[in-house]
Length: 111
Image (tube, rainbow, N blue to C red; front, side, top):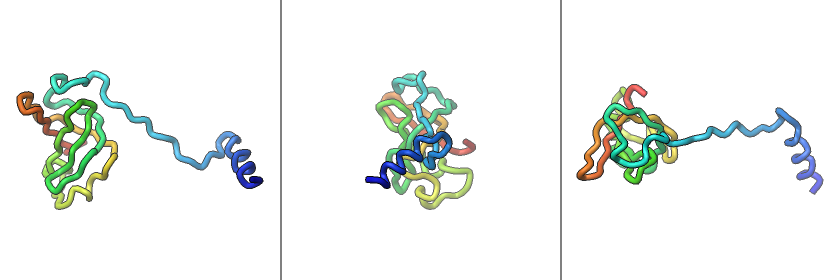
């Protein structure tokens, strides 16, 4: 118990907290549905799934968008895990929106 009290006492001192600052993440407040997406729009997102052909990114709507492996980086990528990881915060650009099939194609090139 004395050790825990010492730790709490040290953490109470300003500027002595060894933890890194938390990066606050928020989706684009103007995008609520798939109809709000426009080609060329740059959005913040979170990687939700990684597959052999790319990754899926949550941009704040019901449907996750696909970033094809050819759109992950400006260089050749043979394995998507070289570029992204699950729950990574990324910036993506909307390439196309298919409203009838509810599909969104995204790109991370040049961002």
